[in-house]
Image (cartoon, rainbow, N blue to C red; front, side, top):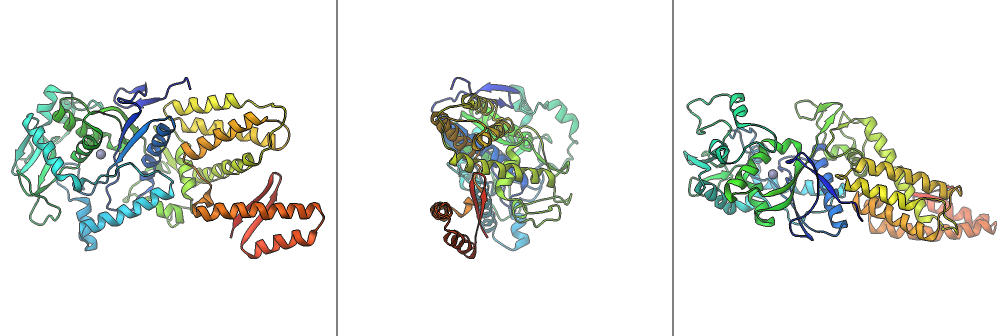
Length: 490
Ligand code: ZN
């Protein structure tokens, strides 16, 4: 393919041709969830965005090491480093061990990710499993003069760092402005500057999640784990770092500062950020009463929802917007996505059954070209989907006998749809969640239905009716269509 894969680099604020550091290997790091509650609609977007990136890079022939971390310590309820640990707070409420909370919600997160048909990352490291590595990183930053100790805690010295390296370049913030916009500290605070951030926090006596360190019994700051684990598994320079736009500041900005302070250079070559999901134009939040978990979406059990939406409807809905655009959730939009996904899946079945003709009146090469141009243009999935629907019209015209396709073009067209819809976009037929059994049943039904067609042709109505009635009694609904038949299990 001669057109190159470009991605928008949030750091340079422009689209760049993607060129990995050590082809064919690609290092991809994506910030994962803090596991103290059920995954919600907001978690689905980065998971699906970077799943499509992971799938597409592999499709292009790269060997991708995809790291998505699990935050299980150090993410505080308050960004200024004084809140409670989110995991520990939930553990106290539920009277459980913090690690029981972590395991419980990690399992549930994995289940949701599987429902959304996202591929598992290559490595899923936990922050709590990398305490020693995080302490080593802190020592490096201290040695290099970009951190200080204060009553057993270690803080990153943003002012010292900013004298040598620009702090805030990812989000476009300036230290002077930050200083002007942050309230002055009272004498009690351990930090020299309000925007300094914790690398290590001394634990209060009642704090459960704590580890020994040269400075105090305590725990690592939230931003540190990503600098540490990305370096451990991908090296101190790696290709792509992804995450939600809400993480750009302070999380990713702090990550850049930590890595640069430790290694003397930036770690990440391409920064990618997905935009947020709003609900009826509002930010989603527990306090706003419009908070929707993925389980609620899939079951319909939430007052905001008019119905249940299947995981594939949600996936299709997210792919219908470009990942850098905001996406507004509404029942109408989800219902439209449901129809769109169904139509695409119905077309996949029509395509399977198309017969080649001697002549060819359709332009498959042109469609292939347009589809990959869209993917190569910073993963433009909405444009890709609109091209796929142009193809749906083409496929239906061939099925209806208005257009003709020859064998070579039919093979190309089948490969195009199979690769794009299933392999790259990660969509699947809704009832495929039943897996292998369903596939086998489909094949058996094809056989039974061919016997029924033969019976009808021989005007053997008794056999044909018997097949229909007994399938119905067995809970299989069969509907005759123009192209053949459709089936579903009750
Ligand atoms: Zn992170």
